[in-house]
Image (cartoon, rainbow over all chains, first blue to last red; front, side, top):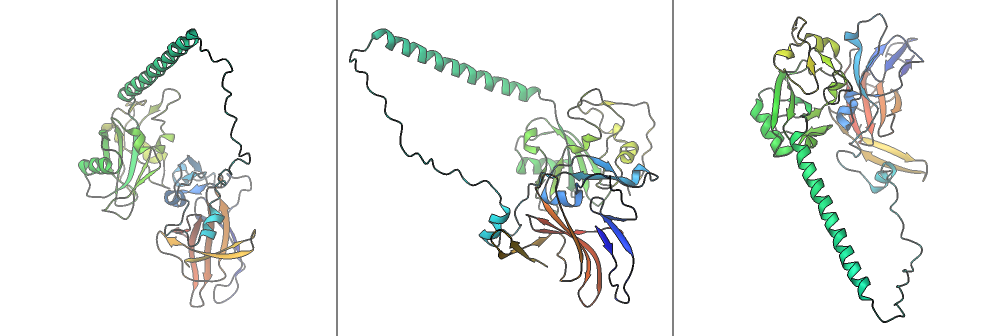
Amino acid sequence: MFSTGGDNGGYETPLFYIFDLVTLSWTNSYDPGGEPYTLPAEIYSIIGGRFEGSNFRGPASSTADCCMIYSSSGNATNKEPGGGWSSPKVRDIFNLTPAPPTSSPNGSTPAPPTSSPNGSTPVGKIIGAIVGGMLVILTLCLLYWYRQHSKAHRGLHALPKCFRIRNIPQNWVEDDLQDTLNLLACDQCLIHQLSLYQSCYDSTKTALLNLNACSEHLEPPRYLPILDSVDNLEIDSDFYSLTPLNDPKSEVVVEYVFPAPVKVTAYADIRVAAVLLRWPALPGMRLNRGRTVTPTKCG
Amino acid sequence: MTQIYVYDIATRSLNSQVAQGMNGTPGLRYEGCSVMKMAPDNTSYNIYMQGGTNDNEILNDIWVLTIPSFTWINITTGI
């Protein structure tokens, strides 16, 4: 957004300013070949949408620590006003759902099959039809049983999936989180591994965890409302774009994983967090223990 | 600034919608600077608004009205 001129109350100013709509900061340079617009976390954390990676934005001379930002290309899930639509007219303007299919213009029903002119019914055909029908039913039953069986089998052996939960109230312990997940997501959401951290960017906690079962109930983005806080619990698993825990394309060497705060350094936090000691075995991840860990304080 | 007017150019009709705020809503003003950007997949339209005046003071706050959820978001930023 370019802002030029204007009146500051006393005199008209000739100044020229640029506001970056993604980093949400005033800047003094403009790159016409820069990255296209994506939604800053301040917006997509409210209207929903997946975190899709961090972009480096900023002058080339600055360190990555200052300029890693989180953004999203959309996938908004909150598409209605919080207080509801003020009128059906406005709703129709923004609810651009496709019109329901109109009823078929051809109202005629298909002609009933004509009865066989030959009144005699061959016994062989009847027996063949019965046997054939039973075979079809048997095959369907077998297919159904096989699918159920393999589904249960997969469920037992599915790799645990790692999630991050933010905005956890300061006074919560593991049991509070477990109770909340059972209550709001799925009563079989049993935490398999958990690490609760003090958040770096505000007075909440952040958790890294994986579940023994029911991972699908936490599929991000999820925002679980809780009583203790005005903020929803925010669940994602996208932090692995830095450390692909869930679906590594090849062997991934991760030194440390840390719940990186929004708009704060990503790699820096990963580098300094001594999570290695507390979170030793996430699936698909090989920890490199050869490096010295230097924890730094939050903030 | 919670009463948002929507002019439908297709039917040439003026409609209004109540917006809500995550951290309050911006006060009434004029002569602000604003720009709209849509999400790459068109699932949201975000109107950024900066500054303006309400006759009592010169404003320097920045807000985003995100549509269609009609939510005001206060952008706190170091200026």
